[in-house]
Amino acid sequence: MTTMTDTTSAVREFKMPDVGEGLTEAEILKWFVAPGDTVTDGQVVCEVETAKAAVELPIPFDGTVRELRFPEGSTVDVGQVIITVGGPGDVAPEPPAAQTGASAPETAAVPAAEDGKPAGRQPVLVGYGVSESSTKRRPRKGATAEVAAAAPKPAPAPAPEPVAVAAVDAGVNGHGGRPLAKPPVRKLAKDLGVDLAAVTPTGPDGIITREDVHAAVAAPEATPQPAVSREQPTAAEAAPAAQPASAPTAEGRETRIPVKGVRKATAQAMVGSAFTAPHVTEFVTVDVTRTMKLVDELRQDRAFEGLRVNPLLLISKALLVAIRRNPEVNAAWDEANQEIVQKHYVNLGIAAATPRGLLVPNIKDAHDKTLPELAAALGDLVSTAREGKTSPGAMQGGTVTITNIGVFGIDTGTPILNPGESAILAVGAIKLQPWVHKGKVKPRQVTTLGLSFDHRLVDGELGSKVLGDVAAILEQPKRLMTWS
Image 1: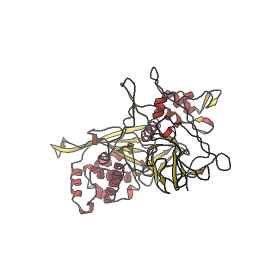
Image 2: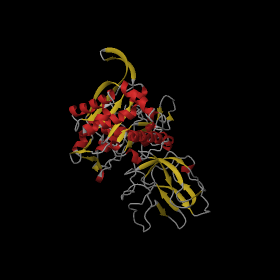
Image 3: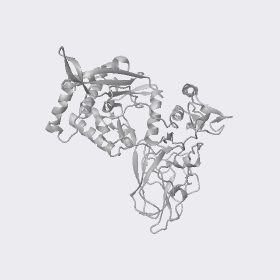
Image 4: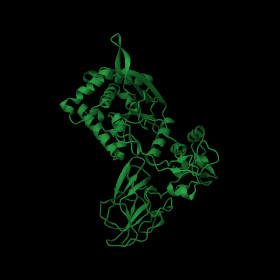
């Protein structure tokens, strides 16, 4: 299927597809073609970044590029036309303002279907397609023309407000100007200091949802994100986190960084998790000297030749064994149905810092993998993250996560749960420390583990058992053979 509409007999339009499940927008990172270039069916014409990953878009027909509707750096709604293509040998028109660096319109109208009726669900390259409703225009934010051309952001205010959100016309999301929201959502907004009259609703009939309130809290802020889990030692080698394009103020005393793409999605997810799931974190300090010796031995084992072997491999295996012994921890809370959903599989997430920000791809069915297979999967995950090619599918369906703040020399931390998961294990730095071993103080390799869990479905006893099992395995790794 293709995402195109014939506007004339010669000119065809390629629309922004839904490159993930239910995504509504994407940022154009790079154009690979220009007006006048010849393109062929399947040729990659641009790279876009969604809230989940960077994706290359192939065009589904042949012809000559006539117009690029948006410049690099623009955020485009799913269903908007991004490029038009004429027949072979067609002459491209003069580039519009959007291609010469001038300010581009924030949204573009979705063309009607050929029968003159409003276009419904359009076929797309990937995903479930554009919703049957017309493209929703987001309210413009008060900003100067120069700043708006670079990226939408709120205008400077004389004094900081508790929450900065996009303003909407009175009466848009309610009757007589009163916003429509259910009592729990109103209470949430009150607790977070959010003015519902300034929140853009996304629910049916203009109702404000919990997600809208959380988005209002997180979206406009350009400050550093909450201290959350970072990456594993191997993922840290992939690439340093890149900074978004910034716009220094006239005085040069501040820099405003647009919050979008992966960073925006991460901020919203972390705020949602922190204010939805009651977090509990427990800690244990453990002697991992024997685990470090086993790592050295496995590196010499022919069964692991060509594979990446490090402490993360054995920590991952230890957590998988602990979950097998305590399967109730591998679950999710279904708020809508008021159910605990126990998972009989483990998709093991590994937090990683990439050029596009913090990502948590996961290893599917990690519970069924042998140690060499797990090592290979971890290696593939790291290589993909290093290349910036982590796909949206690789980040969906995680059940538990491991994060390593020890790579930064940090001893421990309290990681925030990934939404939909019940537990996340933080691994601190492994350091040589004095330790009482067999009645004597000796230098030993020691680390601190921190397990955060959702206290709605994991009580203190269950969380303690899981963390205790992980610690016991890392202290005596031969338990892997007897407990697996």
